[in-house]
Amino acid sequence: MGETIRFGISIDDGLLERFDRLVTEKGFINRSEAIRDLIRDALVEQTWEAGDEETVGTVTLVYDHHVHDLADRLTAIQHDHHDRIISTLHVHLDHHNCLEVLVVKGKASQIKAIADSLIGVKGVKHGKLVMTTTGRELG
Ligand code: NI
Image (cartoon, rainbow, N blue to C red; front, side):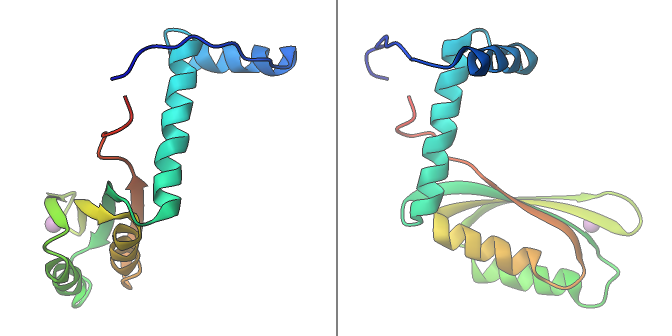
């Protein structure tokens, strides 16, 4: 972590009032912590837009394992990307439904492609990619 710098921000009073309500509602300890959080979020988003930096994401899938071939197809795609999928969690939610969470590490564009190929498999009830960060360079 680097040196802490203080700086002033000019802002419309109405906007600041709304921001202060958000700070309270979200449980931030103060404005500074909320602003740091927003900055980190924007930087993570920029990394994902750039596409070529190494980052980390999680892919969450919910599907019915009784659907013909579905579990096999999802497993085959995961094996195609075994070098980037670093961990998986499988929960048998009930008699039919499975929940899988995959941790994927690689370039943002590669992670997006893997997520799209899994979420796009016919029969997947819900799928979501959470685009997060390796945590490096975020202070
Ligand atoms: Ni299952």
